[in-house]
Structures are given as structure tokens and as C-alpha cells.
Length: 596
Image (tube, rainbow, N blue to C red):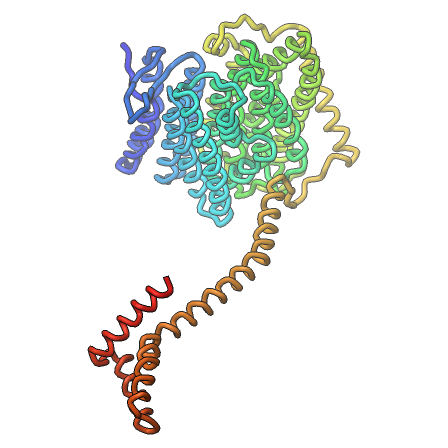
């Protein structure tokens, strides 16, 4: 049996019907949507479907191949897990926003042309902003607005690139684009904004921690991964991506170490992991692309699991800062266990999912570094090694340590609700399953691979790296050198454009406003003069000719003054004699004739 229904519409239309259900029927209906979507997906044959003409464009609404199937599988899986996780919140707006957002992500990755891709790409923004605003706090409203502005700008850049690209090539095909033309750079940069490249990344660390508890799980799964997919589809092998990815993998470590808000720590960690994927896409070999896609698949699971565990802590305690937490392993042992599984996975412990995907990217970098002219990849490999150790520090150790161990905060709360535990349990199981039996993941990667992660050298190298990272954390903590958690606002690159924007506004206000006032005064003066002039110009013109005529006839003194006043009043009131009116009109015509 085959189908060709758009996976996106199943989620988007299905989400609209949620308010019509009540109680358990609503829960069952919500869980049935991703299940139905997944059954539909596995019965769609590879190739192009749902072709349609739109003006001069030939659109392909549904295109399926091995690259987007991998993302499609994991998007359905994480949607199903997240739906279970949020069942206890009873918020129809959040439910509908989550399904709309998930559907938009599916529409983006299965789009067969750039126009359809853009439509769903922008739909992502709508869904994600709704998830942020659903928290209904002042800070969430502000963060959502900033998120909307950044992504609206990114969407315009992307649209401009697509328009120029179509003008240059006459094609909207979703195929490889080589950097060189203006359109190629605009599309590249537009995607990069959603990918959270360095310096334009603060929208992520600003907005994700402000979303609802379930919203942050949704957000961690889709926006950046659709950008990773788009780069893998359009720009594989683009060298610039290697250096962008290196920056993404390295810089968030320093922020994550000093950040107090644990959900913001995870947001920085998210950028760090996407950096590995971007490097893999930049290298562009089959092994590297496989590694990037495999790591995206795993990141959706273990990052979602970590966000879920922190969400459960936040749900029970109402707190998320490291300074306010600690000792929760006594009250929330299952949540603690699942968090540790997520931490082990993101840190790439053997038998956990990160181990079997992150190593593919690093192996691809190491393999290419031996190619003549590619020697600089040695430094890339070293930075990735440092980043791998760093993520163990801030996500593998810091998150579980400060939330569940460390100092006892005295908080004694209930364990997370059952639906949250079930969702976290499923994600934790998949993290271990994929890490233990990676062949199931490798078989659905874009390119066939015989990569073997469990070699003695790889296991020993990774174990040593993790061991020395843990030792360094312990020694720094005991020596009092490790940065203490404290309530503070850490300045990021958004400080530049926030402060810079205010400075530019103040500068423009001081320079342009006086100029505007001066110009306005001139315009007012001229308008006033013209108004006064034309108010009685006809009367003055009539008086000029009439008075001279009357003086020739001998009229003078009081009588002349009375006739002047009467004529002036009659003209202003529109009651002047017809003859004088005609004379004035003729005189005006003659005057214009003489002057021209």
C-alpha cells in the first residue's frame, strides 16, 4: 500500500480539531496524530509527489528521499514523545501551536521546491512564537517578540535570495547551490539565522528558556534541525560551513559554564551540538554527511530528554536556576535517572547515542585532514575534541550535578507526573538503544555505511577524554576555581545590537529630529505666507485697478475710502459686482499672458 498525503497537513489539520475533544478522548486523539503521520510516512514511496502549477512556478509539494526520510522519522518520534509529555498541561493553545509547529517542520523538510520550502519555513516562526507566548509572562512576551523580529528578517533575506535565484536560473529546485552569486549568499545567510550561527545566535538562548515547559522541548527539536537539513540539502561540502561549525561548537561552552539558568545552559549546549553537524556538512563526504544527519537524529532525542527533565524539575519546584536547586535525587529519582541518561548520551559515553554519531563527524574530519591541502582540518579536529570535552562539563556534569546532587536545597517535592516519566522513559530507552545497536540508525542514513564505532581505539580514546574531563571538573570544584553559580546576566553578542540599536536611535533622534523641526517650521512659514497672500489677493488686485479708475474720475477722500472698503468686503464675501469680477479675471489672464 502506498500513500502520498503530505505529513505536514496531518499535523496541522489534526491539531485544529483538538479543542473538539475532551478528557481521555483528547489525549488519545493527540497521541494518534503522530502515529497516523508515521504510518503515512512509511508508505510514501521515494520520489516527487503532488506536483502543481502556480503561475510561472512548477511546485513539488512532496519530495521523499533518504535524506529527508531520516529527519521525518525522528520528527514524528519526538512529536509523539512530546505529546505524551505535555498531556497534563491542558492548554489547547499550546497543543495546537505544537502540532502546527511540528507540521511546519515536516512541510519544510519534504518540500520539493524552494517556494514551498519558504512557505513552511515561515510557518515555523508562527508556531514557535506561539509556543513562547503561551507561557504568558512578560519576559516570554518580550522574548517572543524579539524572536519574531529576527526570524521575520531572516525570512525576508531568504525570500530575496529565492527570488534572485529564480531570476538567475529559472529554477526553484531543491538542489545543490554553489556559493558565488548574491542569491546563493542570501539563501545561505537566511538559513544560517535559523541555524543559530555565531553572533546571530542569541534569539535561541533568549527565547527557548522563556517558552513553556513543553514548548522548549518542541523548540529544541525542530527549528535548528530543519536548518541543518536545509544546509545538507543545498550546501553540502561548502568549506565556509566548517569554520562556522567550529565556532558554534566552541564558543557556547564558555557561556554554558557560567550560566545559572539550566534551561539556558541547554540552549547553549544545543548550539554546541549543532556545530558538530554543520562541520560535517561543510566537510561534505558521505561519512561526514551521514555523521551530521545521525547526530541530528540523536540530538533531537537526548536534547529533548534533557529539556524534559529540566522541565519536570521546573514543573515541580517552580525553579530552574542552579543556585536554587540541588539534592532533588531524593525526591525525583526517576527524573534524575532519565536526566543522567540524557547527559551520558550528549557526552558520548559508550553505549549511549551520542557516541555512535559524534564520532562519525570527527572521524570524517580526521580522514580528510590527511588529504593534501586539507591539513587545517587537524585544527578543526582539535577544536571539536575540546568541544566534546566541554559539553561533558556543562551538559554531562553540570546539569545533573546542580539540579539533583550538589548542595541540598531543602526542596522536597513529588516525582514528575506519570505522563512526563513515560515520555522521558521512551526517550531514554531510545538513547540507549541507538547507542547499543547503532546499525538500526545507520541503515536509514542518506548514504550506505559500514562505519564501526566500537573499535578499541575509539572506545579507549573517548573514555579517557571523559575521565580526564570529569577529573578536571572535580579538581576545579574542590580547589574553588570552578566558576561559582550566581544570579547574574551574562552578556552575549545580542548586547551589541541591543545597545547599538539604542545608540543609533539616540543619534538619529538628536540629528534628524532637529532637522525635521527646522524643515517643518519653513514649510509652515511658506504655507502661512501663501495662505495670507491668496486670502485677499483678488480683492487687492481689484482695488488696484478700481481705485486708479475712481481717482481718474475724481472720486477722493471719504467717498473713495468708503468705495474701497465696500469693494474689499464684497469680494471677500463673494458678492462683488459681476463686471468687476470679470475685469479681475480678465486682468489675471492678461497678467499671466504677459508674464509667460
